[in-house]
Length: 214
Image 1: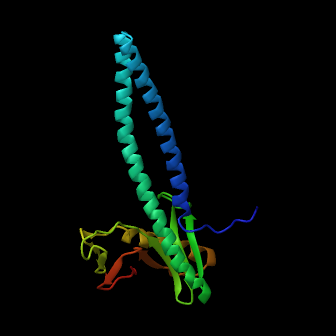
Image 2 (image 1 turned 120 degrees about the vertical axis):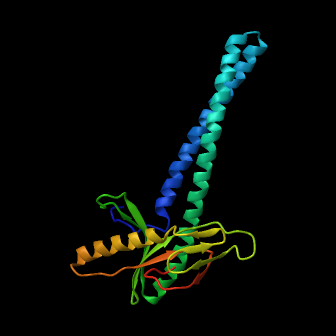
Image 3 (image 1 turned 45 degrees about the vertical axis):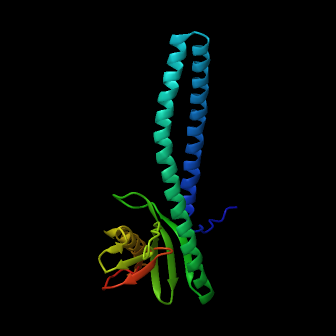
């Protein structure tokens, strides 16, 4: 296959998940090695080889402690990436419904030519009669208490059940600006791009004016 095919929603996160899964496998191999070292140490202790057995046990316990800390961080990272991946897939499926109405939808659009900044991707780009939209997806876990699924956007901040924060707003604007600059340069005319922040599975109350849709 020589054609450059379009990417599915969440493709960058899927690739990262594969990498993290490989890291997890490596950590588990180290854990098996530490378990073998511990077994040898116990056997030597039982055989009366106190110094050698104690050394093996001490080394194994140290490795287990280190692996425990590393595995906790790695498992947490995998869980966050998986949640983000599922959120991008959900938003992508909803946006794909616009294809039937003549819109074009592109997912996981990479941007690598960014002087002074790290490469990033625009989660979703939607093009149609209503304009061009750059959609940034942020997936958050909801609270179980009443109203724990609701968030209010006042035009400046997002008011979650646990407090107000701007997380995702700047990213949405930055992605839209980068896409607009690239399109304007490519088409040799000004191309406005509307930033959108998608919060899948949250009920959003919109209050106040903003250049950004939530």
